[in-house]
Image 1 (cartoon, helix red, strand yellow):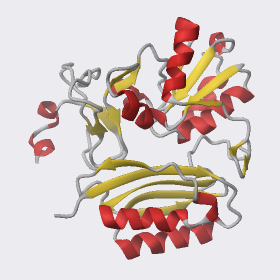
Image 2 (tube, helix red, strand yellow):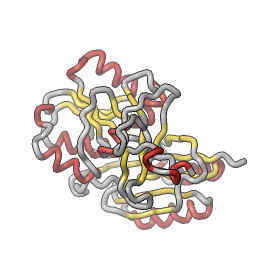
Image 3 (cartoon, rainbow, N blue to C red):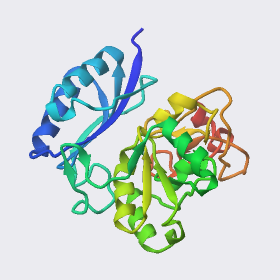
Image 4 (cartoon, rainbow, N blue to C red):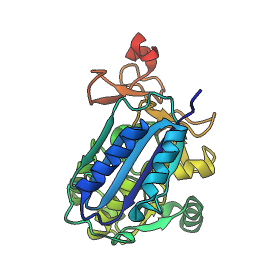
Length: 286
């Protein structure tokens, strides 16, 4: 049987003709039968796609043939074969919508003025050296942080990435401006922008977890500083790094521990909730 795989990657690089890249990516994916979500902007590309492993490998090889994407850090994971219902390839002002496209400057090396990148090992070295002074700052949405986060992390009530700039400008986190801050997100793309936004607003020592939670989980699993489940933007809705992942979430209906995230109350809608399978109903187990 075919082996389904999912790839996640982004590249910040100046693209003078995003529409041409969109049409090319659309043609490549359609020809290979690969589905998922791809966003292209003048700042670069953000892609999460899945399909049969042979098709996905060809997609990666073809995409890397474009010089600007040759160094893309491709993150692989196992799929289910039904991870994406359709293919969406769009041009937008930002590849991650923080609402500040004109504030972000991109050159051939990526985002200009972003936080210092740290490997998972370097994050541990920073914590060993600076202890409790280190602040982990979650760059994801509230629902994602409810089911998994770094120990002691600062999480927000953000429903979308557009909420982060107003939250930071509100002064709610000004007391952290002189502390070492490690921003983190799923695969790293949101922190490219978030760390830049924070630096522009007076946060003195800002880092970003290079490769995001995905790379950290590959290195340390559930035996490091990460706790819980990782929410993902496909039909799986969540993944764990080991068989002993903590359960941090609480069902919105019954309050019992769960890592299950689902569309709720409208199963076909856009609202997400942490809700256990029993409260979600029989259809969740189909």
